[in-house]
Length: 193
Image (cartoon, rainbow, N blue to C red; front, side, top):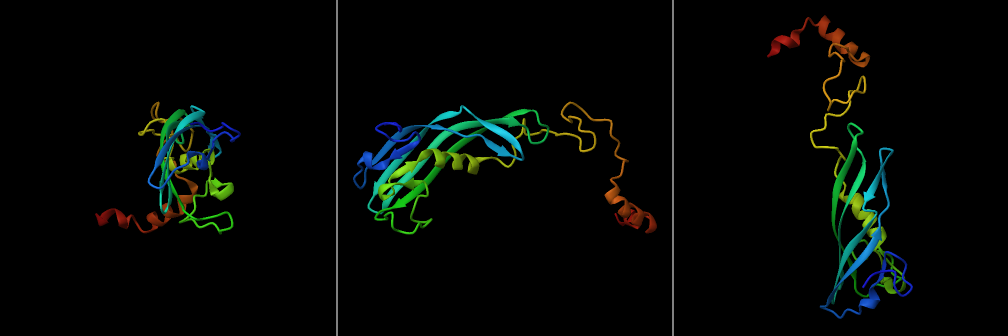
């Protein structure tokens, strides 16, 4: 079963159509169009832009267990050197919807899946869930390679290509006062080792 059939919007699955009895489960493959993400003002595009997400739904007396899985990549500039980069994203997200919760009930983060809406909270917005799951699965930094040296903070040279011509004796004026204090103290800290 795929989404978008029988009047369903793309990326939305009507869980009522699965007709699950307690103890039963179903697997649904859902094509999901992923949006790009902007990090630090830089755009990162999903590759491929449409993924086949696997949705597992399990029914029990206490409610519905939901699991969403897919793999994608984000392509954009390295966050250290701005070279083209790509990072693989593997999503394996889970959620839960408690049984007996209706539209009139106030949302509860422990009992309600925030991606369910519609009559009896049974229309699952897989696209919104996938978008949020990608954001949660992002690494701390998107790099062209793990050992990326980045750019020189002074001249902007790509340090992956080699050392730049900047010298280490150039003192940042914000630190000049500490250098003066060291000179006045006569380098006393140098003999402490």
